[in-house]
Length: 197
Image 1 (cartoon, rainbow, N blue to C red):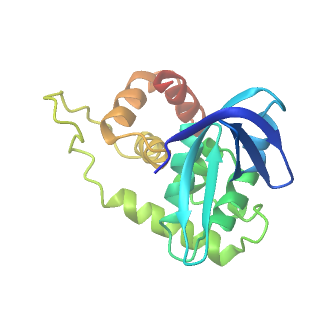
Image 2 (image 1 turned 30 degrees about the vertical axis):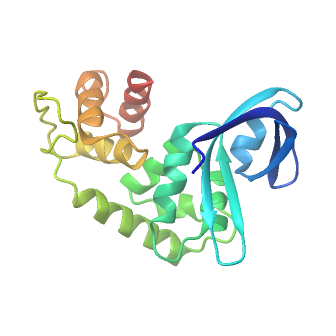
């Protein structure tokens, strides 16, 4: 319903208030976004409206990547908005993508209230979703050339970028462009993210 909201920001404990047009929007967010907010300054947050039987809760993030990761976490059965916020408060979207790509459940358990079983479930469900995507298909109607990425570290980097919300084509292009600069997964992801931004 709302893509983003801009206005004067006021940070509270566990949420922020964006004042816009005489209305103060209560927006739940991660500690990462709260740390980036400059109080009493014009701020834009990318939003997600969670509709429940008895409430409409607004969630907002300072970057589209963080919002995309939040939505990805919500797609995992048993993970609600509070758990998703906890994960994003403990890990940046890049760190989270790397945790999924490398199957590092221990990193995800740093999030408050997220135990080993939930962390493993997050990894299994997101890995399965990525495996369900045919990386040879291009999610674009344009007739672009297919970029082939070999299995192994480069494929893991592509999967991590897709967790962050990039299309298979964008991820493969970026990884192919930086693949000669490093053979370390973390470094490839960082370089590819720079290219994509």
